[in-house]
Length: 318
Image 1 (tube, rainbow, N blue to C red):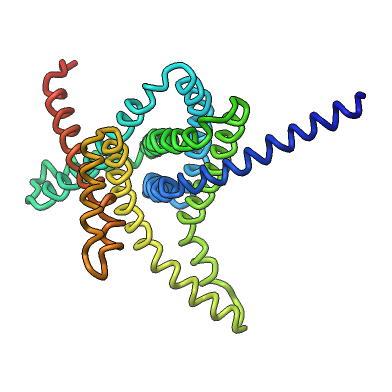
Image 2 (image 1 turned 135 degrees about the vertical axis):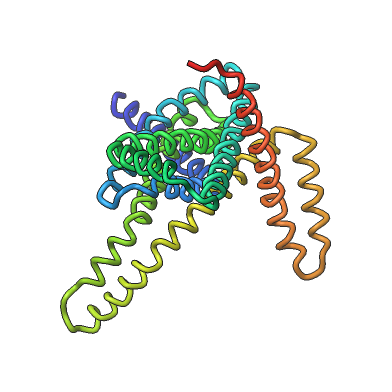
């Protein structure tokens, strides 16, 4: 009798694991697009630190990402069980935050270029040198800022991944929901930050291959590959910076438009009209939602930055 009960228990466990594996696969497919954005954003966020600190920074952000998931998974289940109506407003707030951060990066970059075009006085040069000395002396603070910014961005993207995954398992039992979300959280975090670590260390790998000794064919090929990796690494990081910023608008704008039903319907209608174009209609209709979501994200980010600038003026000075 005890043996039969044990076999029944094992059979139930096997069934649950099969269900979790199947649902995890479906959830992974649905979140694949967000993961691409997550990868680009985080590779961009950890760029700019010294070479020997790149992996520690990635590790610190990955730990922060795991902590985010430890908060988000239980929170998602509680919200789904008690206040399901709050999921959309929370996601929209996160989407607006991504648009805000993306436009703020562009705006600050514009201000830096604009100020760089003017002739600097001797006093301004002295101030710049003092600021540079302060920055160099406070690299630890800069690194902490980079890590904190990356973790904040990860929180928003992780929330979307968890929300999408929750939609896949919403009709299943509580245990299946928890196990599936946990699997998605762990696998996605390891996968994303493993790839981020590989991307930021491409130049070091290239340097290692280029400096290898020997005259064999494999060594010569390795040197050429290493040289290509070293020379292409800065362009790759620059491209990831651009892609990461675009991803902020695309993901954030997509979250916002999905929450505003008339806008979502208008975008879908426009994509349907694009499908009627001869030869390239299918391709145009596929990219139209992403383009329109990105434009909406830029406008929302500009509005958010403008609003914050106005509020800053009314902030009491210390």
